[in-house]
Amino acid sequence: MIRNRVIIKNVVIFGLCAYFGWFLKGRLTPSGAMMGAGARGEPYVLIQELETRNIAPKKSFIGHVEAIKSVNLQPQVTGYVEKVLFQEGSLVQEGDLLFVIEQKRYLANVELRQAELDSAKANLVRAERDFRRQSSLSKQNYASKATLDNAESDYLQAKAAVAQAQANLDLAKIDLDYTEIKAPITGYIGKALVTEGNYVGSTTQNLARIVQMDPIRVAFSITDKDLLNMRETYKTHKKNEDPKLKTELVLPNGRVLENHLRSRFSDNEINTDTATIAVYTEYSNQENLLTPGNYVNIRIGSGEDKMALLVPQAAIAQDSNGSYVVTVNDENIAEQKRVILGDIIGTQQVVLEGLNPEDKVIIQGLQKVSNGQKVKASLVKEESIEE
Image: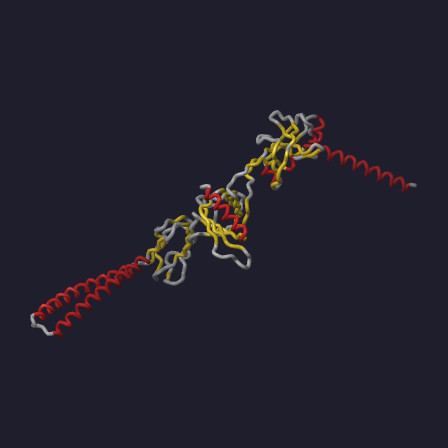
């Protein structure tokens, strides 16, 4: 008997605890507070603006960003690096001086070759005078044929010596020019792989690398069917004096670059392993948003814009009469509007009829609102919903 009383007592205590816990939860949670506020007066709702977007059909591909031009700087002469004249990671212009290799030895060699050329020219003057003299004497029968032949041979050898000396001087000047390493293209230079004081040789050793950033190339692969469709679209728009295809590049951070396409070409054969062909597109990259090695999403359309009004699917409700949404005007009055819907795009749906671009629709709290009722509304952005 006593045991039964203890059991009943525990059940009663447990029930009271559960009741008070439920009561406190209803009072303290935000949803409970909203329900309480809605019961006392105007319901609380979340509203969102409509989006107008170009929904023209587009093909999407994964593209790989690559440089159109890139150069590895290599020394053509041997010596110690005297100067490094650039800031790592900076933009360098074609012709900018980047490295200087010790020049004393090459300057001395140029002076030596110049002296050899001067000597050869002086010897040529003497040999030419002697040949002319012997030629004149030979005509007067005062010089033998052998003497004339020797004079002619000396003259020809002197001319050849001048040509050789000139070539040696030219080579020496070329080597001297190679001691100054200049940028062959305009682009961004990376890390200096060799610093001042290091000895370099005319081998495969790299000093630095320059990569062209603007324009830049995006490569992607498509099927032969897509290639044919793309060519047909291009021809059609070319006849209409609008040869540019509409393109979008979606960067890794979600930013979209539109219509930066400058030119394109496709490879000359289909890859039999993947049954696709490579397409190379050239883009303007003045903001340096595209970096070689990146992967981007490239979307290519027909070039004809098709603007549509989109409504969040969370705002759409249905009854026996069809689909409808509830909008909130500037005076926070709810108004039910019948809509005719089109295709679904992501979390939104195309509105064909029934809404205006400036409308704001209820996306949360719709079940608490009746037509013509005043509400408490908070505007939310699409980005915050996605997050």
